Image (cartoon, rainbow, N blue to C red):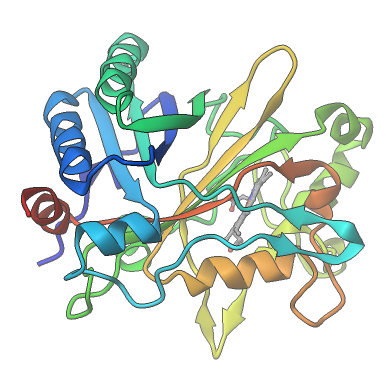
Length: 299
Ligand code: HEM
């Protein structure tokens, strides 16, 4: 029976925190197991936690549950000199909650546990912006699978190694909001491929072939290349962007959509969104099912 980490599908949170760690040289697997076990014990409702591991760590920590295709994120070199860099780390802890206070307490406690054995490379708070919009002002998540379909899309199917776990992709994108806002609303809508107010997909001649939706709404052999997106906006006075975070039952879906966005799909097109946002991190992770995660920590 599929028993995924429940934080993947808890979707009422308003505050988020992303922590990416690299394990220090000389730290043993048993120390990492102990740390993660303590982390799992201290994070309690109303805070949700998803633990993701890089391919190298997961292969070592639970060789019995390696899903097919698991690997690290490779940098993508696109057309027009555009690059999606790899900054693959070992551990991703994605915490979120409706309570900012409880979330901050949990983040501090988690980091105290991790500190001796791992270096913190990404320490990023984020939030739900308005009615689940990206900071460009467009609703993010409209085409996401709903209800039971979320599990179908996000989880490794029953009967396969790693069943009930989920591949994750993360990228910290920095927006050029001043540039984007110079466009009038109709032009902005053509970049995204949906209307701004109501998030209705553009149709026919109104929908450019290089809009973000045109590049990411893909069918291969009649089958949709689907993922469950849980991206998190972040902002301070100087820097605004989106921590793209998505779950899928197969890693190749991420590769496919990145190749579509970066102009490597063979149709001469690349995503117009790349003119207004740039990724500065990139990682692939495996978020194991609860039983596989617990087995990994008890070994
Ligand atoms: C700056 C980064 C990004 C921003 C601001 C962004 C924003 C959006 C927005 C506003 C939509 C339309 C509404 C919706 O269906 O959610 C959308 C759709 C989508 N995005 Fe992104 N996105 C970003 C990066 C990515 C990346 C890196 C991928 C995958 C590699 C991706 C995959 C998708 C998919 C699969 C859809 C739904 C397409 C459909 O079936 O209609 N996005 N995104």
